[in-house]
Image (cartoon, rainbow, N blue to C red; front, side, top):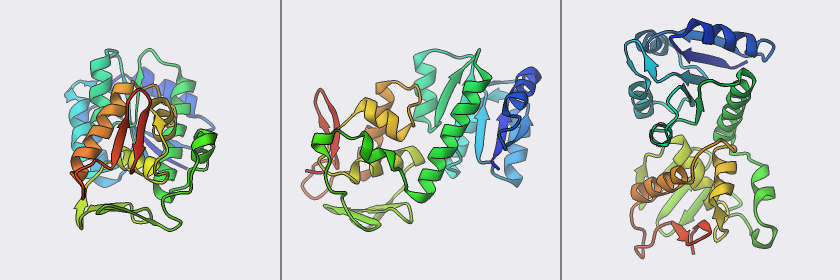
Length: 244
């Protein structure tokens, strides 16, 4: 059973989501303000946070930013803000999905389920669909048969979920790490942006621009490797690939 924290000031939406989740096996807690949410998070961390942005005592984006400084808890933004700029801002801050009001309660429950599945993948590293989603003509042996991937001073420990560049630890968000692992497990395989959206974001509705932004952040954090080339290469007109 998963614990869901809904941060939403509209009581009707909270009631609607409770009804939609009936029988899902998940438990829903409700906070109507940022203060209530911070109080709840001070005592326990839920499995997923569903976060409204327009709250009586502030902007949910601020809470999203705070959480990403200290936590990898999945965040699903639920808001009436529908502009691309708002969507990109939320996802670039580390939100896992973005749902615009008015919304389908059943779809929201399905998206929560998808976020929980991605969370399980983060813990176990298992993602059997990944190889099946690659182009048949370009499938190759995984970068390593063990838990550690090494390439030009870069070391990725899959079991510990740790990344180092020339021995220095690199702090990646959950989404950044998931993207790096997705491409690093298959060196040389070219992933289109649509494939990365399917594999990293579980098919969530996001813009190509968000993929480009996450890749850019990963490159910046990893820095230049032995020959100055980035670990994730841009294949113009197609997508991205790891390594040589």
